[in-house]
Amino acid sequence: MNWEVLTAISGVIASAAVVISVVYLAKQIQTNTIATHSQTHFATTTALAETAANIASNNDLSEVWRKGLSAPGELDNDEFFRFALLGTSVFRNFETLYFQHRTGLVSEEFWEGHQENILWFFHRPGIQMWWKEKRLGFGKDFREFLETSSQADVKSPNIRRV
Image: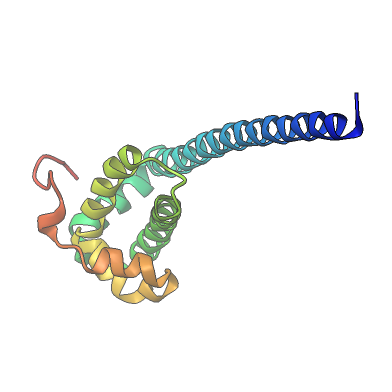
């Protein structure tokens, strides 16, 4: 065998090794992407569920949240302060979910269900009152998403109870 044949065989083997390495790398990236999406989904769901559970597990907080959403004028100053803190907590979670959707970390299906909830809460009278004071504490894109929506964007406005 001459050197030219050996060089050609070496080139073919090296090329095959490169292709195998690239395929393996692509598979690892795909696996990592799936894991990242799964972790993001879990973390987002957990944060939203924990916030809801914290409100629901305390009768006083539940009452402040319920009343604040629909009749904020009935809250005294201390109650409105608590309502504002709850609103900040809830909408921080919503903003995180919005960011994760925009960056492709959560599925469109997951986003659509939560988008409905976000808009429903945003268009409650108490949240509108709170938002006027707190809006600048949130990112510009999230503010624009909320502020360019309307009550008409909520697909099920009348089937929920507060």
